[in-house]
Image 1 (cartoon, each protein chain N blue to C red):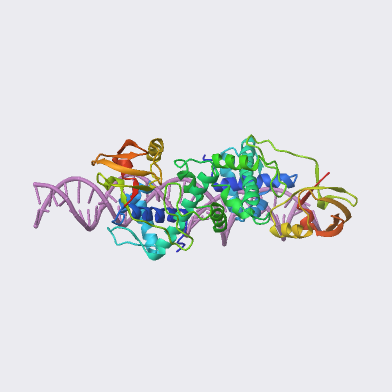
Image 2: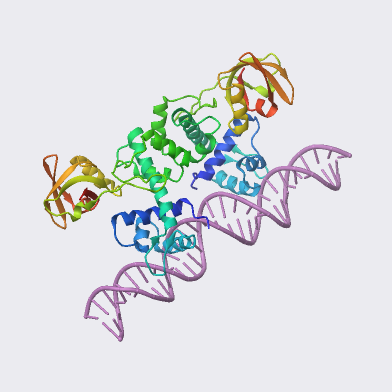
Length: 217
Length: 217
DNA sequence: CGAGAGTTTTCGGCATGCCGAAACCTTAGC
DNA sequence: GCTAAGGTTTCGGCATGCCGAAAACTCTCG
């Protein structure tokens, strides 16, 4: 009944991250793919986490965070995003370089150091990718959004956040000059790609990029 | 044959730290005490490290770092001391509060982030306790010193470093106003305690504190 | 409804690191 | 030199987390 460990924190974070982008609960297979472990490892770990009251799970079913699990997941996400923000703002990292470093540090930093970093940064509400940073009490900012990949032609709005899962997407967008706050207008939408106008120029974004972007609704 | 892991790094660091204060090689018993593990765990780990070429060890004998082990130990010590320096200089920690945090972070920080911290701090040569920080190539500053606990009456010199192993000693010295750079003069020396004059006032330091202080020779 | 594909679970196993108990050395003291 | 104390090693065992193979389940399609 430890309920804490780097491994469990990674599972919690991954389950939570899925809920931010997908309406339906995550399946063990997807969890395994995201974590880079074998499905059998997920079964085992999920059972342990269910016993600890962090997730709900019935055999052969999906995995859902309990209230306790959500609260622990938010704490991990807070660590991750604050560390990413710190790396970019103070340590000279680019936004596509921070993920792996934060992945490790989030399990190592004490609450006290995290608080010191939060204060230094001025208690930021969003990280460099636009991801909301949960406050220490678990609350987080939110505003209406649509996936750019789901937006129809004519839709216009500021980019809110960009998934940091694929560094290649981040680099592509960096080259296009698209980041959080950039106002984009959809000029053409198809399942394969979305064409947007940003900074007065047209950019064709493949689906994998368009599905990694939240735009203000 | 991994030759790296948080556990092995801790063993290397502990063996190295011993050589900074004691002339003779560390025994498994002492290693076990310092690390807070059972002697049998040390036997096992030392065997593994010897097989990896990090230490030399014959059964029932002491443990000594090889050249490879020394170089890896210095890298770990560098991490530890740079992190401690950073915590004090930038994150508002006191010198008696940094040890545990650094203990964890030293295993988590990447070379790149360490370099960024080193640059930010201006490539310091010593940490807040006066411990020399090995350069990236393994070189480190040194100057002649004597243990304050071994000094005779009349000896005078600047405090070079203070062991960070016992926070209570650090706090005691902080209250006395004694830190790296403080010039002290020994007025009385006995096995139990050393009396020194510092900042014009006399201070009686118990042996455990006097044996944790290096003074310029 | 039934079969096959794909998913999930079970099971035995492996690696790391730790432990305690018992056996084994070494060495200090007589 | 011998004994006893204390340090060291061996051994079996435990916990965490991971794996692959095989069994079990679900679900979709015909």
